[in-house]
Amino acid sequence: MNKKIFAANWKLNKTPDQAAAFAQDFLAKTSEKFFETKEAFIFPQNFSLDKLSQNLKKSPVRFGPQQIHIEVKGAFTGENSLAIAQSIGSTICLIGHSERRQIFSELNSSINKKVLLSQSLDTLPVLCIGESLEQRQKNETLKVCFEQLEAALSAVNLSKRIVVAYEPVWAIGTGQVASLDQVKEVHAELFQKMTSMNFKNFQLIYGGSVKADNAKDLIALDHVDGFLIGGASLEVTSFLDICNFDS
Image (cartoon, rainbow, N blue to C red; front, side):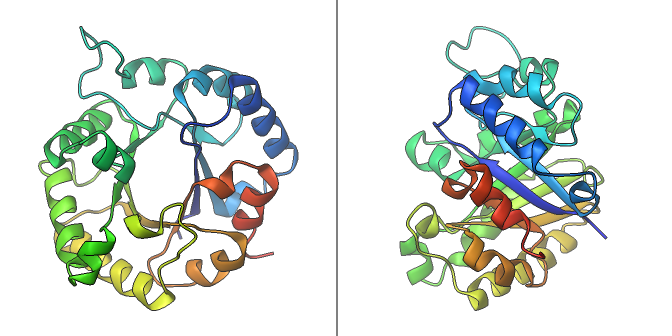
């Protein structure tokens, strides 16, 4: 049985010292038993990657950048190199978050190149997909999600592990959460889609205003293998409240 994934997306928050304090506190409050059934991922702001690495080096917690460039080096001022992140211990990367798509106009074609790059460097991609409120109201949820999946995963290695995070855009940071029936339906369809695309090693996680009071019900749904967590991941206590859904 796959371990449940609890991924913290800190967005544009936490200084290096704050990231280090979080790591120390988190490790102090978890044990080997915790990691027998769970995986913890952290996506910090890039300036905090190195400090986080220093504090998580010998732990099972995985970390990586929130955004990468399609090339590992070159004349790309302001971009983030996955190879450099990897050199300080990163083993995961977040790709295609809705804020990257909406605010920074990332295209599916670029997202695909990033997934291919992450696979080539043996880094685990966490690919984000999801529909806007307007698209949901038009009953286009599955159409949008399938289009994003097919484009982002074109020509990738089907045997390598991949994590797909379904995040309805209208539920990110808004306090709104997709209903259990909505999440159940989409995750079931995504599971069937990934299976039909012949992926051998994938997991589906949910994101969108996940908190301790809804985590237990959400994770009990079929094909919900964990969460991508925003605001509630900024404090160790609230993050662990979600991780410890079974306690």
